[in-house]
Image: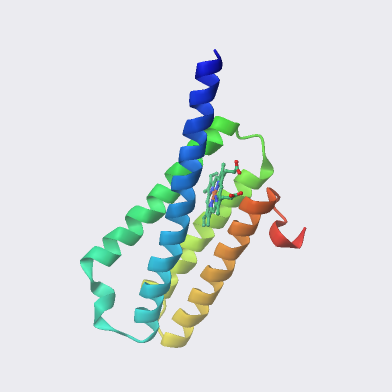
Amino acid sequence: MALLGFLYTMSYIAYKHLHTSFAVLSIVFFIIRAYWSVLERSCLHNRFVRIAAHVLDTLLLLSGLGMAFMLGFTHFWLIAKIIGLLCYIYAGVYAVRLGRTPHSRLFAAIVAILIYCYVVGVAITKSAWSFFG
Ligand code: HEM
């Protein structure tokens, strides 16, 4: 029983490390793509970067959900994180693809980064108020 508890804790810690790494890689890839998009650089269509960004966001969500299932969906801050991630992804898509002008894409990129900071705040404080609580 103690061994099972130990393995459970270790896999939770492993998930958390993976999740934090995906979170860092996700924002790094996003900033690179948003920069290319605002400056209208052709490398924005680089296949590797585009696919890697989608894979990272999916892994970020899956690793977060994996831990959320282990914790049980009883915490409101977990819901806030899921909504935050969806808003971050939508603002990100607008910044790199949907925005018609460089200004609108820049605005969307700033919004996406602010949402990302809010979600990091939720992760650290374990409160939907994030850094404002
Ligand atoms: C933009 C999206 C996200 C970012 C930037 C992010 C970031 C982070 C960071 C930095 C941590 C580590 C916090 C610490 O060390 O105390 C963390 C932990 C965690 N995240 Fe996320 N996360 C995101 C999305 C999600 C989603 C969608 C879920 C699923 C509901 C989730 C669930 C969790 C859980 C359960 C923890 C562990 C909390 C703990 O035990 O300390 N995250 N997240």
